[in-house]
Amino acid sequence: MSATRTSTGSETIRGDRGGTGQRLSGIAVALGCVLFLGGFAWAAVVYRPYTVPTSSMEPTVRPGDKVLAQKVSGDQVHRGDIVVFKDKQWGDLPEVKRVVGVGGDTVACCDAHGRLMVNGKAVDEPYLADPGQASGTKFDTKVPAGALFLVGDNRAVSQDSRLRLDDSQQGAVPVSDVRGRVEATAWPLSRVGTVGRTSAFDALTGGGASAQGPLRWLLAAIVAGVVLILGGAAYTPLSNRVRRRAG
Image (cartoon, rainbow, N blue to C red; front, side, top):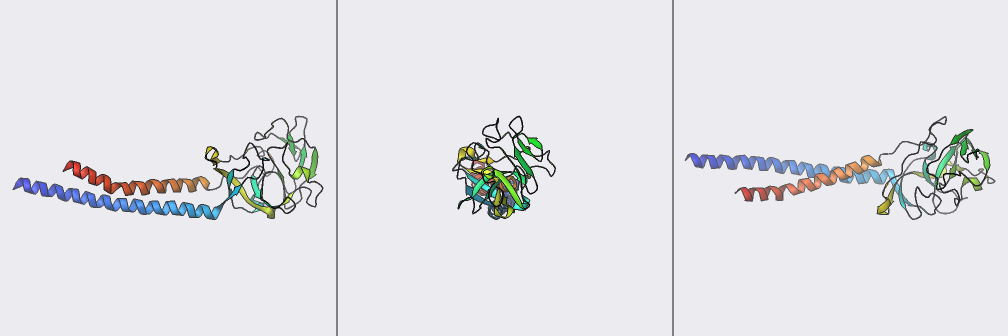
C-alpha cells in the first residue's frame, strides 16, 4: 500500500516537472522566433547589400565583395567613413569610397612624408594599400558646402575626387548622392566580418569616423533566436529519452 502511494507520488512529481518543462520550452521557441525574425526584419530596414565594383578600395574591401551598408543620409557621414554613393558624373553604378573631407574642409596632398593634409593637419592612414604615399597626384582643394571629398584606399588605381577637380563640384560628391555607410563584408565567407572604424581623423575639429551601427546587436539577436529555438525544440525528445531510461 505504501509502495503504491510512493510510486504514484513520484509519477505526479515527474508529470508536474514535465508540464513545466514543456511550457518553458514553448516560451523559449516563441521568444527565439521573435528574436530571429525580428533581427532579420530590422536588418532589412536598416541595411542594404552592395557589390564592390572595382579594386579602388583594396585592401579594405575587394572587387566582388558583398558589403552591408547602413542606410544613412549623406549629412550623417563623417571623415573616415566608407560610403556607397551614386553620382551621375561618376557613372551608372554605385561606387564605394572613403570620405576624407566634408563640406568646408581643405584637403591637400602631400606633406613632406607623403601624408594627406586636412585643414592643415597631416593624417596617418593605416588602411592604405601603399602606406608610404597618400596620393601620386598632388592637389589642394576646398570641399564645397553640402559635399564630400571621396577617395579610394588603393590610391594608385582609384578614380576618385582627386582626378575630378575640374568638374562642377570640384571633385566632390553632393551628400544627397550617398546611399549608405559600409559596415561589414557579407561575402565571400573567408572575408565575413565588420569593416573597422578608423581613428585617423579623430584629432581634427569635428572628429572622425562615425560610431558603429546596430549590426552587432542584430546578429546577436539572430544567433540568440536560433539557440532558443533549437534548445526549446530539443526539450521534448531529450526529456522523453530520459524518462525511458529512468523507467
